[in-house]
Amino acid sequence: MKKLEYAIVDIETTGGNASGSRITEIAIIIHDGTTVLERFETLINPQKEIPLAIFALTGITNEMVADAPIFDEVAEKIKLLLSDRVFVAHNVNFDYSFVRHELEKSGFKWTARKLCTVRAARKIKPGLGSYSLGKLCTALNIPLENRHRAGGDADATAILFTLLQQWDSENVIPTMLKSTSQDQRLPPNVPPQDFEQLPDKPGIYYFYNQNKKVIYVGKAVNIKKRVASHFSGHKVNSQRQHFLREIYAISFETCATELMALILECHEIQKHWPLYNRALKRFEPQFGLYHYEARNGYQYLAIGKRNTLYACLETFNSRYEAINKLRNLAEQFEIDQKFCHYATINEGAAVRPNRLLELPDVNQHNRQIENAIAFLRNSKKSFAIIDNGRSEDERSCLWIEKGHFYGMGYISLDTVLTGISEIKEVVTPSRSNHYIMQLINSFIKKYPSKVFFQ
Image (cartoon, rainbow, N blue to C red; front, top):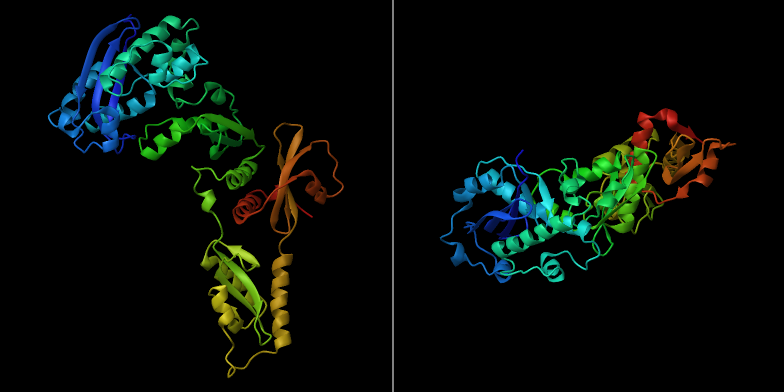
């Protein structure tokens, strides 16, 4: 049986992501676990300008790469060196994503098992102050010449790899190389135990940055499976790579149902305002149904854009939805269309009935408006949703108070309720919003048997 071999790789690039940047230098050291078997190093013409900041870091200039081969010219040799070998690098996903992307552009399909020396060093030599290559080399007395050049960093990584193999008394590296090992996919800064503790249950999960600040909140039917999906695949866009590099810790909270997870996700996004959550942060209804009285004593109903200075009767995602609601109300309560406006509230307030037109009796008209408003308010019922719990001896419950989400929680299966409104005393109060009520309304249409009205 052929002995396992490793390709220890380091690259320099024009930027931080594989989709928008190119390789400027690559070094590959073939290693059998104890000694170096072969070495390859070359500059690469990236066919684009090298930014000044990259030149300041690496010292590689546009003039230095002008006569170097383009990646296509060395792609076949690189693939041969990497084939059937474990791809080893310090922060392996960075180097791997660039090499895989460049090989694919050159027409070569290639994948490999990966080993991250950052993650291996954390496991085999825990407790060090930093696991950057420079700080590791200082702490472990590894010579590091030509820093931030592919050859110098690859040589240092090869020495580090050899030492890690010698110190690996608990077979950490063979375990990491198993095809089922999550270490093959986890970002370099995520502790494996954070992933291992994740449950196969519904709930929400949190990603934290180095300063323990929440940068992302997600909802899942299966927390462990969903979190793993963030780290799988081969997308190389800059946003994803920056996102993965910023994750330093993971936590979670289980929920009994997907609905509860969705609501909790919304609440936590509004609470923490995470950097990488975008959709729910911007989710606010754009239009409202307003009621006002003009100086002539006639009351009006108007559709307008949401305005924090005015209280509205109801909110809507679209003007179309709002207009349909007002038209239906006007028809149901026989309200004269002259007193229904489909503009902004400020525009509506400026409109005055034409004195030449016949106007309805003001008292009768205002009663019709008030009846329509009362209908809107009375149509908002109070009810509970009772569903499965987190275990067989409990049930989950949500309380909706007059059309607004009030809160959610859990009750024991043997709890005796004398009235459904007692659910209100059990749940933990929370803020309602339009999005949460949309989730709840969609749920009750699908599962009416789980809804209990007051």
